[in-house]
Length: 417
Image 1: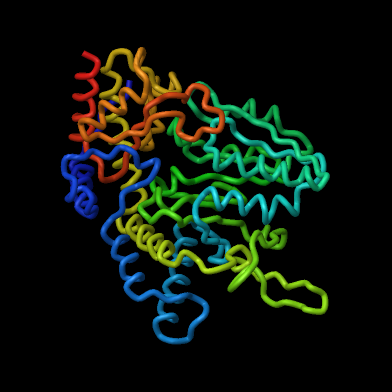
Image 2: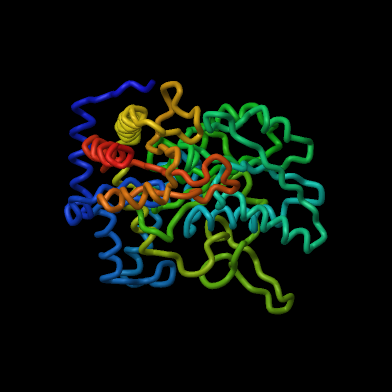
């Protein structure tokens, strides 16, 4: 049984952070429990986007003051995101439209050029589709070229963590890459990636989805030991349509452009040979006009997280998640997903999934919606739904409070009585 944790510091943090989000001032009776899908936006992020659209320019193409100013802002944001990730260099940070785009770029820029006939890629059946479908699509592309790549799926254990024994049983001498998730978007379990990396043979590369961890805990790419990392900005207070692909600099020489065109992706054209020279990172993977407003929103969101501190964020969210689980355990007919997820304390990262015997998730979700409580229902984009199918997911962030959790429990109890 989880134990309730309460500190004055966390309560003060709730108030200070919540005041930074205009949505809760404009909708004071609405309770938003769907931050794993997308977070609400603080005023600083909204202002960053609005300022840009009030004086829009392109980057890398103008020498006049407005263009130079935005160019310098984007460069500074790339450098700060690199620090945020504890990266070796800002050249490792590629701006994408989100995690899905990031994984597709890994497939096209690295996988298409480096996977050979008989190579194997390991995916987790419990991961989000953005982690798995790009690799299955790449398999089809390579097959049309006569290259057969094998995709193997490994599972998770009874509490929702990566099943190490199943994973290791799938490793062969032809395994080239393993795709993992830092915090699962349904189970909410934090996988010990550094420990998993330590037992994997080093020729094997590791690609990590950090979408659910990036706004909750300190994500240190060097400590994790991963080779590729992807996340979406809209899950860490930034706008939609912006994300990051981090690529360890040791693999830059193996990358090929996933897109080419204006501005980036290529440096010069040779008309005599109908060829071109590839640009260097990160331009290599950033062809065309970037989502400049999105990048500025990501900069503001990163600065917002840094102003609070990732340790403080983790402490507050852990306490809030623990309180949520403690309260949910009082309800009859409730089963956590996975069913043994909360049989012992620990690993509380703002995300709890569950179901009720005899009630569909859509029925419960609709009832909560009538009381202005928004949660996620369904299979939550899991690659192979399994136990997560037709469940409810409550996902928290810093703007949520214990009073909101108490209200959720009151409404659920009313539904069950």
